[in-house]
Length: 465
Image (cartoon, rainbow, N blue to C red; front, side, top):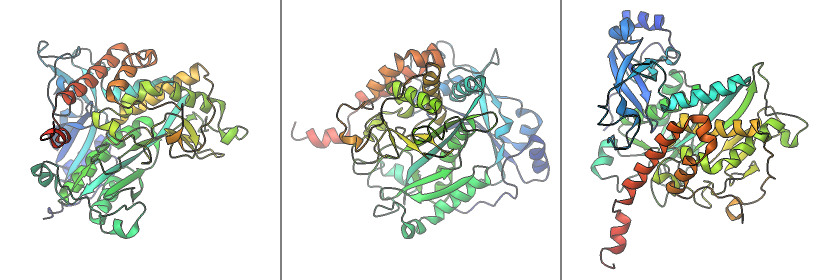
């Protein structure tokens, strides 16, 4: 049963505070969502009566500091230095970034603003908040006279069941919207347009410029692509895209999942991250027409940094136990942290050769990544490569799945967490306390999984053990 469509807000796109006030006075906006991004990349916050927001809450509001020290279940695990039961779980300040204020067309009379998270006493940014971590790397680049342009390609599965129906079934026996691989398949994607058209139009109306959607490489799998932007803007867009896709599917009585690997027999869902560096006058710093494939020395140093620190940054590209089940040969998900030209078997693929659009596509990340953390880790590794003028290793050619001796992507969360925790590069770039915070998050995820009994174990051992 489809839910009733909400009325369309007449105004779309970005807003200034004064424009929001006008819409509130005209009765077109009655709700403002103020949201921060948590460690898992989810939007967390409050819905304000719009009149109250424009009068005072636009300056700041508050949230419990446990929101940046919790797991997927919203539990409050022990062991975090930043916050605890002993410290009383006090407040953080949520400071609306009015540059992110926008209408949300798929929610009636609603605007959204993303918030920075500040210490309640010092009003300085909380260093382990995802947005602050990325902003720190963006500032480093700015100090070097550079800007990072990035784009994320988000994949997800669309199901016939609603979220409520999926939950009542224990997420078993789910029905993907398609019965067959729908990669680039126009007829099958026509049958999904009730959701996908609403997603494209809704996101576009929220000032997230959609390029296209398409069927992906399995039954019921979708991909949404939006135009590249600077790193922080892209991370903001990514977070809103994921939340918006869930809300719009829910409105249509269906559900989506951004799990990296929702089913053993299904393809994984990725979030490839495209990245390039640009100068203040708008020239590509990755392009040199005289270089191999049009790659400048700076691009080669940057890519060398990504490869040098590939193990250390994997955790931020694959933050969950489930993330590592996506890495499998012959599935278009990489298993080797090597670079290659226009080669979808490589973890790091160079695209746009010979043009100003030459760039690196990191194919390691899954759809479950936190975009702020993933982009920050990639930029930190690339910056290190530039600062140390690292030499780029020879290109890998051929099928990387069978590449003997090629650098492997860590195969477990446990291994990736160790590489992250012991990385001097990340400790210098993020701060030691920040790295320890996320290393503890990885330990919690691992410990929770290690003590669980899975359906696979029961089916395998109930009778035969």
